[in-house]
Amino acid sequence: MPDFWLSCGHHLLDRDEGGGLLVTDEFLKAYLARPELAPPPDACPAERSLYAALLADPRRPVTSAEIAALADTDARENWSLITGFRDRLVRHKTVEAAYLDLVRRGVAGTPPLFIDQLVHVILRNIFDSCEDVFMLRAAELFFRPQRLNVHDGSLVAADEEKVSGANPQPVSPLVAMLGLPTAGEIDVLNEANADTYWNRVGRP
Image (cartoon, rainbow, N blue to C red; front, side, top):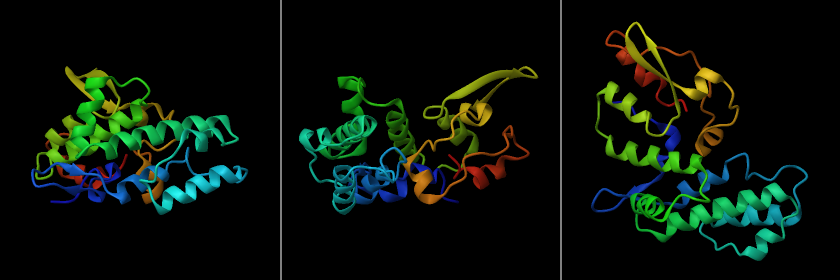
């Protein structure tokens, strides 16, 4: 069975004895590939230094003073969000435990994108041996915004990003790092073309 949902970073994670997902440095570094975090050419020395330090040690503690020292307002906001999210991930034994803590304590302050990414990778782990492409496509509805329409008496769901084409940014930090395509034609999955699902599941 082909690997699937590559953009979620499942292959960068380890598993514990119970099958839960363990956060690795490689998984944390994938978030640093996000375009919001990579320092632009005019970034201040403090931002460049922080970025380099986290590339070398993605679990390195980041103080509020370090973030406050960043010259750019957007950079300060982005780094506050990502370091808070990272701290939540490494504070728990598994990704699943971090997600459970997030939903129990409230998601305020956590970008919806990050929540979708956690759901994405957790479902990838759950469906690791699944070969039913219709079940996998149904699972995508839990982490990809959809646009619904009735067509020939059936309810059809299409990824909002592909339908609108309004979001030029990758939906996953791994998209930028792995160079995965971000657009494509929209096909309705059915029995006749079910096998084609495996050719496009790496897309965001």
